[in-house]
Image 1 (cartoon, rainbow, N blue to C red):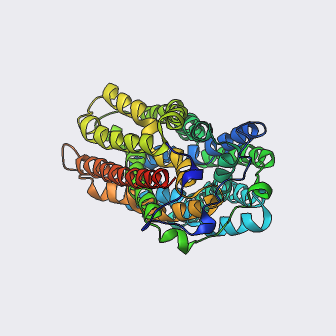
Image 2: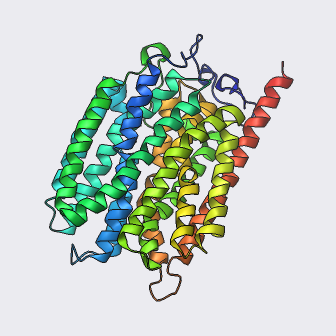
Image 3: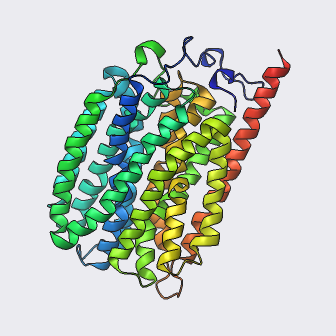
Length: 429
């Protein structure tokens, strides 16, 4: 795959001239303090998205226990979606705050919001209070903590950019693996309230350490940190990337949040259902660095497209017929890395499309493109669920599989467009 420096296009896809200066002359150092930033971002992923990825355990508990009597399954689905959509909705505010005060200030705001969100959720007695705490505050906290960090890794790496992003993204798998088991144990052995309080204390300490360690290279790169860059938005290649983001996240959360309840719907116990979420996160932890290595060697768009296609096919060919504990473990473990391909690949893909200078601006657009699917993906999945059917999740499974298949077509078209640009550049030399 060609490098970001070659992102010079021919009409009708040509960017503005000032968008072509996408890397500083000496290039990223490909290491050094960058590995400390990788460790920092790994911790952020572990204790933001990792905890959000284990929401399926909370969802299964809410659906099986009458914790909030007046709440409906859709309420709980929306609250889980808020963990992701509120984080993405915060992107413009995060981008502006980072431009004014640097990377660490918005991250510190995020740590405070996360902590307050989990602690206040422990005192919730009405569903609207859960919307505000576990939904809105936790979602915004995750966004303010995570979003400023994602652009930092690509500033430190070029040849190992996808590997570094894969390692950091694996943090969500480790966090999800840990909290899928620990959350269920805390709920069963202690209480739902104390599970929130303990989680709040953990996220406060770990994300504070990660925030203090991270360093950006903005003084060298001088990135254009625009909250909503209309010039980028009008580009065809950017539109393809945003469409892929939208549709792949729509499929991702439908699978991620449904797995635990699906497991119980086929007769598995709550502990086995929690284990399914844990195996999915284990697959994420193992697979995402491997996807990063493959992307650096074989091309970031190529690997992203293949991973998206594999997700769609596996949902239709493996998840639908999975009626046993063993087969469901196989699906969760083997697809853990591919399901959330958006979160692994979006940083390097944004560099491929627009370059390092435009990275924060394009990331802001990418986060905004996922607000609606993050909010309504599990709502759609639960609406498609039929309790009276012997296969209650069949339509939701088909929905998720089709989302991934359509998204893979978008990524193929993006790869085709960028290949044409490369060929046009080479023929002009």
